[in-house]
Length: 216
Image 1 (cartoon, rainbow, N blue to C red):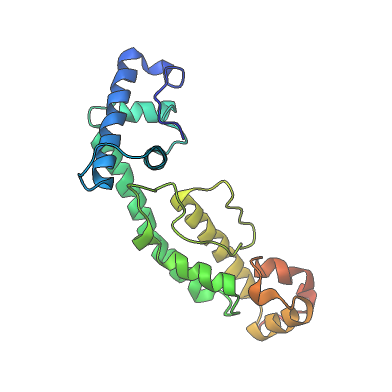
Image 2: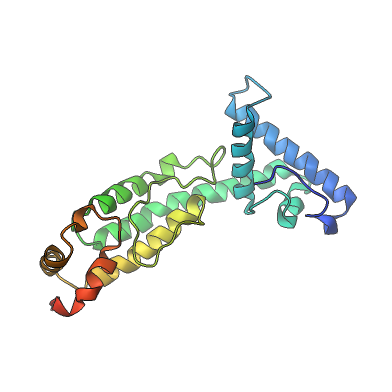
């Protein structure tokens, strides 16, 4: 993610707007550095600076600070306030994952797939783990289990968690159509390594759906 506010990216804003955007970006970045170093320094290593700039861009909802949408926010009268509003919105989204997690946990098959159990445990900790100041772009969980239809390769931050939960909810609703005993019987017969697999349980069992007995 770029730390520059380039003329090409926000040409429609105008020179004065670009200057204001640069000052706004500098204000926010200085605030993040101050928080990151607990007020003890005004400079950090290049790698750390890139991480903070990436977090800043994610909070603003853009891939790059050159994005015209970022420039428009940064050029406002109160860039720090605008940044904090967006950061608070991310915190609220992280908090709402608790309810979504409970919905998934209530209906997800109790098959003790190691990856699923560990992923669910890590997602339960998202509100506590999610650092919207210094690493908002990082996924605040370890979603090693891949529910049916989920592809997290291009996803960042809380977006990845929300989409994982959506996919897991859909998968759980599909699996709950069958009894746990029938699911286990078919998996034992055809996919002996399923307890250690990262692959969706639905994807593993779907080729053998005809062998399952629907719950009454």
